[in-house]
Image (cartoon, rainbow, N blue to C red; front, side, top):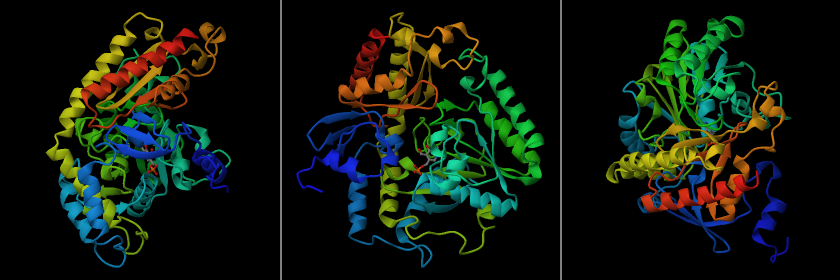
Length: 451
Ligand SMILES: Cc1ncc(COP(=O)(O)O)c(C=O)c1O
């Protein structure tokens, strides 16, 4: 442990290898849409820490609120008494939840913990054991949530046995259906997915054993695919028919990311349990679930809790985050910047250039934008002649990400398909986003040249 050891080298030596990371940069400071490394490199951050610092790194009002709370009370244990900081937060949070029936909250620290809390509540309330998840879903890396994650096998591989009682059903995403393409009508994908769900309830887990169906209303890690409103309505109907709870995991797509506070607002579909985390406290660890009081109160006192659950510093940051959303008209910026990025990416796709011709699909909502490449090497149809003759080796997205990093911009790929995800801060300016688009285009052209 030499004191002269380079910081990144020290990290590689002493931090768990199982983490894996996009770059070897050492992040030292964050401000708005930029991160500065320990070596003074200024990075344009199009990841916002995976959809967390929605208001930008170190938003002055959020940081000030946290600092003030730090001098007042840093730990107010929820199994010992009420926390004033939590109650202040809930007075701001409950009115912005997507349905008036969601009036009771349990706060925790991470998204995965909140998903687990939702599962515990669903099981306790229905007295049924099983959970249905979507193919392509991501719910976390703890034991229970790894068992519920179906975006990639890596999260569970070699770590079994995972939690039992989890069954996967289809999500209306064309890449998960043989023969479907981006042009397959949404109605067809929705009907095929709802049929699969009905079969899941007849062939795998009977309604009388099924506590809940959980989905990310915008499939995140699995490919950045918004659920069509008809699918959400179909799920609600099936849940109502069979006394199954509907859980919306809005950990990534919530808190303004899609241009509304919660994605389910677009369809008007009421989840029985809403799961939130990430953007709620703009970088401070806070998560939670919301449901009706009648549902939440079916759990026995003492069955829920946790040492750090709903930490007051994180709660103060969350209260300031919600106020800033309102005061700074953040959703208006999301609408404007969303138009900007969609029109840039769609124009590039239609440009007829070598780079543009690599793009298969541009999709998403607000500033949760996915771009999928047309990659014959990844066609699931092995009979496809293009796949047999594919010149493209591996995925295009990670190569584009590496080219962006070379140009001091952070961008993430996602899923087993060839997808990039653009998740800038929701406060990104027009100029910053133009710069990001320019860098992305250069990076894509550099990759296209070598294909
Ligand atoms: C939809 C969704 N659910 C749950 C999680 C897990 O959250 P955390 O990493 O805070 O445990 C994530 C994280 O990316 C997520 O995107």
